[in-house]
Amino acid sequence: MPYVNIKITNEGVTREEKAQLIKGVTDLLQDVLGKDPASTYVVIDEVDLVDWGVGGLNVEEYRSRL
Image 1 (cartoon, rainbow, N blue to C red):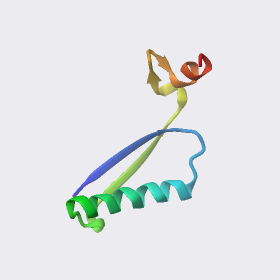
Image 2 (cartoon, one colour):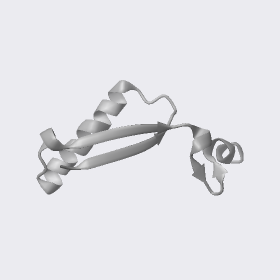
Image 3 (cartoon, rainbow, N blue to C red):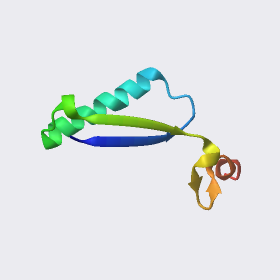
Image 4 (spheres, rainbow, N blue to C red):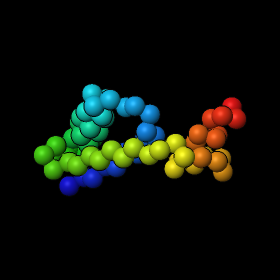
């Protein structure tokens, strides 16, 4: 029973894009590992930019310095 957790920044990802991610990951696990899609779980967590860090800064601040 595969469980995949995808974490993305909260920047307007659509329902359709999330559905594509879920289907794509499920298909990949079936194709590569032979896992049954009926027992494959995919969770997408959206994280606010200020709650995601890179280079010692939250993403919002990091991007403002680029």
